Length: 123
Image 1 (cartoon, rainbow, N blue to C red):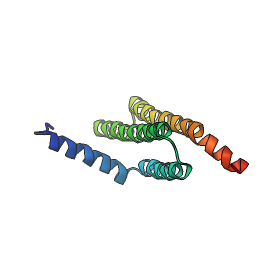
Image 2: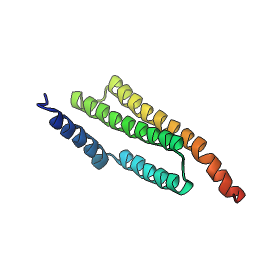
Image 3: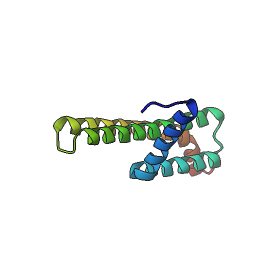
Image 4: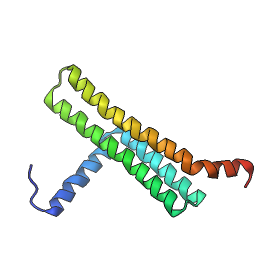
């Protein structure tokens, strides 16, 4: 599938992102988590550096989930029968998403931890 121009390339890219949000349960979970994190960031008054880290973490997870979906769909295209390598490919893709999510949680603890500690101490 060859694209004719830059606009068409963006159209296909946006269609892929929308497909991921519409069809994938985990993408919806990640999106909900991202919304909660953004609201929390607004409430806490994150500074520019903290926002930068949070935005990178959010997009890292969304990108990993989108790539996971792409790998799963490609494997499904190649075979609908069980194959140990197909299972490994899907597990590796899911593992990459898990690593991105764990990294985002750790970053969230680092960024939001001081704000939460201040709330707990009454500051």
